[in-house]
Length: 115
Length: 114
Image (cartoon, rainbow over all chains, first blue to last red; front, side, top):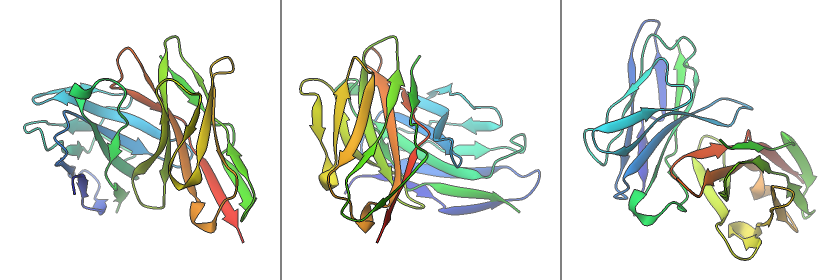
């Protein structure tokens, strides 16, 4: 079955360290998204990409970076500049070429904590 | 720009009782509306969506929602809940003109009590 795979499920970061969260999809979707989820705040958009080699900042991009070298992959790096990285991170995708009324498909998330 | 309000952060309800989770949105353009469910430590799963047509939308797990354009609401209902419905529920909108970007509400935690 097609889907979105996020890894690892749990991740710990030391002070001053960059960490990378993986997001892979085999749905042949064009658009991919990264969200941060904090208790009581819903989902906040970090970055999104509508096509390979192109991506845009979301509402809370500071301290994060992404790349989109392949259609299937959209890794998120949490840099040392992100001072409060503890959160649940969700990756999502939709098929861009099927019109604008498609819901997003989500991975199962990565929980990042500070050591 | 769009915004989504879910007035109830937590809703406790007894098993087999009905439940309504409220969602109101604000937008200067026409929108598509979605309800998602999230179980602990998992991603979001689509419950139902409103795109056009009938304002009463039926989804999975016995849930339904009604779109009310005049009140800009999209409330989620279930006539009889089960313990397994305990989860967090998110309302979301995307604008019809450029439906790639989604705005999510803060979520409502539904707790079904035995």
